[in-house]
Image (cartoon, rainbow, N blue to C red; front, side):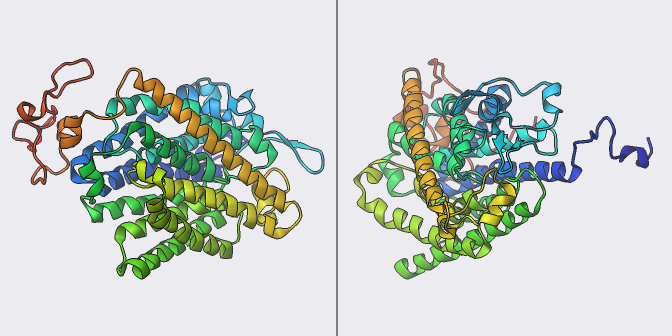
Length: 486
């Protein structure tokens, strides 16, 4: 086959409906979002925690990424973006057959009536396979963000059970309701790229999970320094840069709205980082690298629900607020709240994702610009600051947030109470005392250490769920740290 034939506009591999540019961008955006999790959050979690929990924290993220993908293609995708079962839930079915995956992408329940009376359905100009994978990367990062609330003590077997159950019974509900053609979608609630579906959900579910799992050891809560600040910055950098795919891929096309979404994403993140850092300097006398990462995160989260719908000056306003309001909630209000003091949210996911996600959703209800909304939204929409029906839009944003909060509290609670019938949610005390060496038989840094080794004669037998004694990891020998060549 010569080049002219290979690149014909229409061929068996290039159907008439395929837009190569849109498809290339959607696959690129998917890869950028996937890199946020693997290796971005894997690296960030492994380095931001105490050394004794580096391997366990990284593994929780790694496992979630793999488990979500299989559950997604077996059942989850069509529960979130398929035919309606209930106003808030789709009918589960596999997304694996080539007849399904190679047809033009379509969100069947998104059909809506335009101003001129015609009906329109969301149908991107690329195959269903591209949309299935793109939406998987969103589902995966939601579970991984949630994990940040329970690092350093959740039983790894309980986590392995929790991931598929929460994906099916919690995530798919929010995704269908807001994105897949559910009742909030048709009501006109705005969530451009996941401020509610991903961030508010993960923050609320994470706080709920932290309550039921219980706290870390007292010694870990009192002193939990990152084991590698520079590596933490590498993970944070992957997260930031990957967010261009996160928000830039939301329009399902390589169009002008994707461009402004990418710019606004970075403007808001930079502003938020600078504001958070400035507050650290004013109140604590010195800038904090960890604080800068938190500020970066809240800016990225806050802009997400409105990235392609607000003007760039509004992105700066959102950055100022996302760098200050979550800072106040984390640094001041947290210490004054008996509930937040009781619940051990390891990485402060409630503040960086729930508070920032809610803030972003509400600000979008105020700042959404009508002409930008017309580029991508199915109905005439505007923020409250632009008059007209904008005040109603803000109320819709509030109601949707309450639904997402309520569903995540209830569903997460039921799932964890169910798992607790069979598997303890919290690690046993001997594993909590030792960390990675007891849980996995592996350590993050083999050449040096700051904690004692796991000693079964001192700390009790390291046993499996079935009571069998577990040997050290098969990937290291008895010298601990000398890798076996496979």
